[in-house]
Length: 357
Image (tube, rainbow, N blue to C red):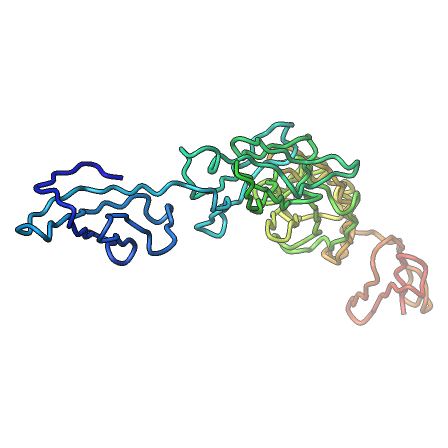
């Protein structure tokens, strides 16, 4: 296409020549009639226009020359299919919280078409899902906006604890009949919809009354179907420990609660022989309860004591026979030495009896 011309001389014996970028390689000119030809197949997507200078020289005259600017515009044809270009590994990755309502926007699947968007419908794209995911009653889980490529939820049925990742294949179709596909990865993110649950309803434990402070008494454990921060649990004692004899430590890594001794226990106090603790486990929104029954075992931590401390026995002759009972009371086995005389109480004799021998 000639943009303009400025002929200095016109004569039938004219020779034409082509000058500029692409002259001789991409384009040639018939030097006799001035027709311009393409040397090879042109690609509009590489270069959409070429500009040359055409010289016309009068060979019969004094070499007078005229020139013209030539602009060649390459017209588009539909020779490029839509392509889903991904510059990074996760460019077609979408996230949606579980239990999201229907029509929740998840992500956009955008394809690229190198054809001219101004030339007909060659680069006008429409989208559809060609490989969807169906639920247990054969309904699609996802839909797509055909004009924008935005993917939406169809039903309120996404449950991360059941399936946490979906693959959806999307097709982009241009107006000339060419198409391309891309795969969307949809990650279902967690919401806190599960309470922590103890692995047992009741825990049984026993401990000696002389157990050291801070010693482990019983370990409880719980599970939570959620993940991340939603599954972080804390254990505590909320009942059965009015004197605060125990405390709990939370092992967040292993999801355990460790009940430890805070104050000494005295088995000789009847109310400290059995403890029925109510233990609570909670996350950010929910909690559960369990019970710890702790039996305290007696330890030999008290010496025998006479009560009263002094006893008065009746008078007796100095030559009483061996084995005569002097006095009798309830006390632990004990041997007494009084001068050269000895008195003994033992399991073989009547309970608490002092026997002369």
